[in-house]
Length: 489
Image 1 (cartoon, rainbow, N blue to C red):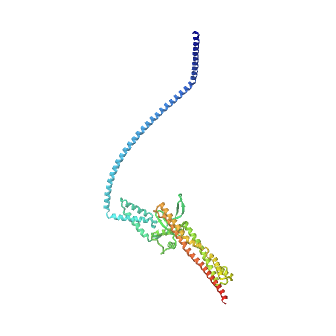
Image 2: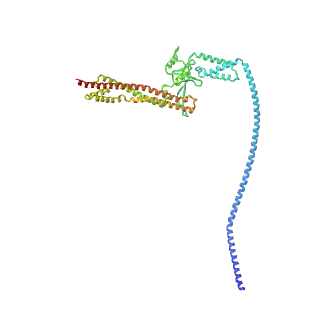
Image 3: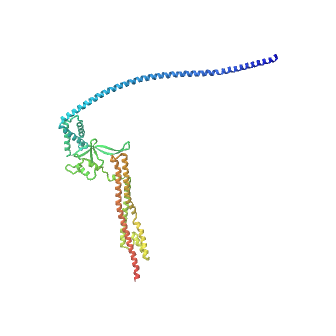
């Protein structure tokens, strides 16, 4: 029993010692591991503490900023509230003032109506007189703005304008001096209408054209002193030029001179010392201005634009060709007429001579063959006689069609102008209408004389052809008779 128990106790002892050693080694390992991880835990603890400190500082800073904003907003709210209260008080004050003004306005309206009624009663018959004076002054003011007499009295239009405004105000009455001044201007205007006066005055005239920054064409003007002759209130001339009066610029020369005898009469008047003839414009320059603005023939042709130039070019070409052909055919007809009188001596310088030469070159052939040869010779001469006449006929036919093309183009341009600018301004449509009418006229002007000259040239060619046919028919008949005479014998 003892022997068996001893080994068992030893075994148990050994097991306990092994466990002790194992636990010691494990604890040693754990201690070494704890010693290694201890610095890392301390670093993590330090980082977390710094982060918490930073977060707490930022929270405190945000709270301070929020408190500052709240205090600022509270101050602004108080200030705005004060302004709102002040504006409400001001509105109330202005409403009281408005009510006072409305009451004053109504009072004044009643007072004004009473005063106007009293004024009407006081005026009595003078009201009609003042109405006539106002109407007369207004009409005279408008006339004086363009009257040639205003060159000597440039301030009278402005004086009458102030008088008219004064009378229209219904608050003032004109004085007797102003009425006398109106009478003076009317009387003086009647006196000056019967005078021819020579005087020196600044004259404005056009010197050229220029382009502004927008690309638009503007007129350039200059002013110089000239000797001027005024014929009543009707016309004013200086040299060969006609002048109109503008209240702002004074005397202004028209852009071009009057054609015809008007210039001669004008020069005679300026140099005359007694009675002389003169072409007077009773419309006070309106008619002369319209006549001067009338476009010349070249300007009218320019209104046809490209289509008009094409028509004119074709017309000139056709005219040159047909006149040349008429000249040539006249010479040919003269030569043929001389050849008819001397048929036995054919010349190669004219169509009949060349045809007759064929007859003389073939005396032995039969009449049928001779007739065919002569017909062939005539056919050879016909294209020479009708040379280029067909082209002239084409021009006479095409010219009206080109005029119709220009008409359609001009109307299209007119409708485009109406679409863009409306129909209120006739000048915007005038260009297209002018092109339509001018091209139509040019087409007819080219077609009619060209067609007549073509008929004239074609008639000359046909007369020459008729002479050739008559002569060849006579030659063939003569040959047939000559061949029948020996057979009868």
